[in-house]
Image 1 (tube, rainbow, N blue to C red):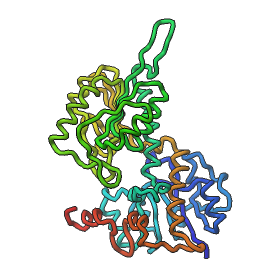
Image 2 (cartoon, rainbow, N blue to C red):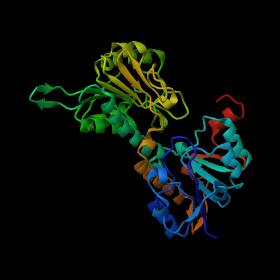
Image 3 (cartoon, rainbow, N blue to C red):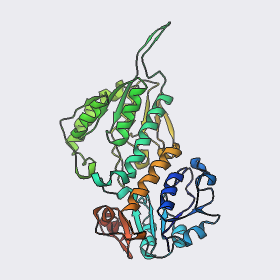
Length: 377
C-alpha cells in the first residue's frame, strides 16, 4: 500500500498558507505517494483544487485525517484535530512546543509522532528543511515594505524640480535571516541602512549587503545560530549605544526573536520619545512580546507621532511564495524518512532526532517534556 499523506485545510484565523503546493504534490505522486487533500485547502494561497493533479480531494477534515499515514500542516493541530488523528501516525508542522502544554499531552497520549518544523537542527545538512529560515526571509522582506509604507517620507534620495530629497535612514536590529532580507530590501528601496546584532559573525554579511554594521564590544554568539542572553552590564552598554541610532532613524525594523522565548526588549519608551514624529518602528518580534516596550502584538500604536507596528504571522501575508517554500521544506524533510516507497524513518538520524517532539507515547524534546511534565527546564 502506498504512503498516504494528508493535507487538511488550515483552521487558524488569518492563516493563508497551505502545506502542499501543486509542484510538490506532483513530485510525491510521481514517487508513488498518495496525496489526500481537503477541498479548497489551497484557495487562500491561490492554489485552487484544479491546480492539483492525481490527488484525492475530500470535503470533510475527519475523512482526511482518518486515511493518513503522515499529516502535513502549517499551524499546530488543535486538540480537536489531534483526536481525529489515527494513533501512531506522523504529523509534521510548526508545533509551538512552548505554548499550550495540553496539546503536547494530547499528542503524547494518542501515541502521535509529531515533528516540529521549528526544531529542525540549524546545520548545513538540514538547510533545505529549515522552515524557520525560509519563512523568516519572507518576514524580513515584508517588514521592509511595511516600514516604507508607514514612514512619513521617501526612502530613496530623489532629485526633483523642488529640490533634492535626502534618503531615509533605516536601522535594522537583528541580522539573522529576517534582518538580512530586510537590509537587502531596504537597500533596494534606496535608503541608507545601519544594522546591529550582538553576534559579531554577522558583521561581514551585513557589510556585504551595503549596510553599516554597528559594533558593540560584546560577542553573544551561541550554539544553534542564536544569541545568548546578555549580562545586565552588557544590556546597559547595548541600550546606550542603540539609543542614539534609534533616535536618528526614519524607520527601525526589529527582528530579534528566539522561538519559545520572550523577545528581548531592546527599544525603551525613552528611546521612542527621542525619535522624530513621523518615524516608524516595525517590530517583527511582536509574537514573542516585541523588541520595543510599546509594541502591542497585532496592533499599530501612535506614540507622540511615532508609529509602532506589531504585525503577526507576517509570512502568511505572502501566501504564494511562503507556501511554496514551506512545502519544499516539508518535502525535503520527508525524503530522509522514505526508502523503497515506504516510511522508514531512522530516529537516530540527527535531523529527525532533533525535530521530534513526541513519539512512542513520550515527549522527546527535553525542554518541552520538563515544562509539560512539571519539571523546571
